Structure formats: C-alpha cells, structure tokens
Length: 297
Picture 1: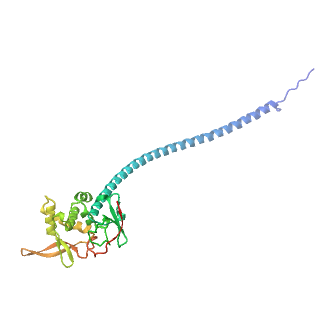
Picture 2: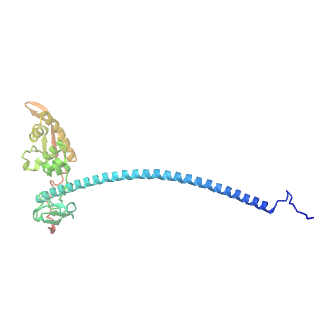
C-alpha cells in the first residue's frame, strides 16, 4: 500500500509566497508611478501657466516696440526739422555777418565760421586788440564805430533792438512776427541809417541824448504802415514803446513833459535815450589801433 503526502491549508507553498511578494511589488510600483504622474501633471500646469505669462509679456513687449518705433519716427522727424531750421539760421547769421564785415565791422573769432561768410575776395584778416581778444575783419578795415579797436562787438553782444535793426525787412519779418516789434526795430534803425528816410528822433539836452514824441511816433507809424487808422496807430504807439523798452533791456526810458499847443497845456509822453544809457557799440573813447595777426582767405 502506497502513501501520498498532501500539503495543509496553513502551510502555503513557495509559489504562493512568491506571487504575494510580486503582487506587493506591483502595488508599490503603481503607487510610485501615480505619484510621479501627479508631479508631472503639476509640472505641466506650471509650465502652461508660465507659457501663458510669457505670451502676455511678449504681447506687451511687441506693443512697446511698436510705440518706441513710432516715437523714434517722430523724434527723427523733429530732429530733421530742427537741423533744417538750424542750417537756415546759420545761413542767415552768416549772411548778416558777411554784410556787417563788408560795412567794416570787427567780429570776434569765436562767433564766426570763416568758411561760411561770403565777403569780397573771400579774405578775412585776423587781428588781436588791446583787450586780448581775437577778431576778424576785412583786410585793413577800420572799425566804423570808432572804438579804436579795443572793444568790438559780435552780433550776439548787441541788444535785441540793435540786432533786429541790422536785419533787412525779410529777415526781420522771419525773426519777429509782431508788428510792434518790427516797427520798434525800424524806429531804432531810423536813428543812424539815412536810407530809412524818415527819422522822427530829435536831439535832446542835458541828460537826454535823443527822444521821440508819442504824437510824432503816431504819425510816423501811419507813414510806415499804409491803411492804418489814426485810432489803431494810437494803440500801436504804446505797444511800440513797450517793445522798445523790452528790446533795449530798459536802457531807454519814458518821460512825461508838459507841452503847450494852441494855448492849451497837455502832457506828452516821450521815448528817450538817456545820455548815460549803456548802448553796445555807441560812444566810448578812441583807442589805439589793433595789432594785425594774419589774413584768412
């Protein structure tokens, strides 16, 4: 008789133990994979949020670039316009300096582009005066203001009223839009320029060098500007006087004086140039002739 051995239920076989261990490993593996998947999902969400932020930032930067390009275009247009105006002003100054040099003016070297001015034969003489400053003039040209060569004025040293008075009508009109300003410049020019042909100034006495009456100024304005009524000319008198005071930096003054006409007394305003008024280029003692350095041309 043979005997068979049968395993009991509480004594698992080796195969069952191995399957249980493998099953546990698979569960652990699944848990790790699920954890990794969750982390990846979170990472994907973060990356998508970063992407959306970068897209918004890129859009903002593109808008900013468009704005900057528009601003650059605008600034370039302004720069071109400023350069054009500067070149035009430089040409005007060169023309004015050329005329002044041809009239015999001595102008400081630092204020002149000797290659821009247009004078006879294209030659300028450089001189050094007693003040130690260097000047340009036409060869052997004597200072027309008889300052003896010691103090000679560049255009920028003059009072605004003197600068405007030296301009021709076209340049004056481009430099001054207001009619009272242009009339003030012409009134000043009439003092010393006989070509104006209509000089209302009168010689003064004591502490007044020259003066012009308000009533005479009114008639002078009407002669200069045709079609102006007497009432408007009367208004212009006050504006021209104000312009004269402003453009002369108050070197001029307004005085009131009692006048008599047809037996009646009235107060007359006078625009006066005091004897002691500091007017660049006018008056001053004669001095020695300047030393000649060289001739440019």
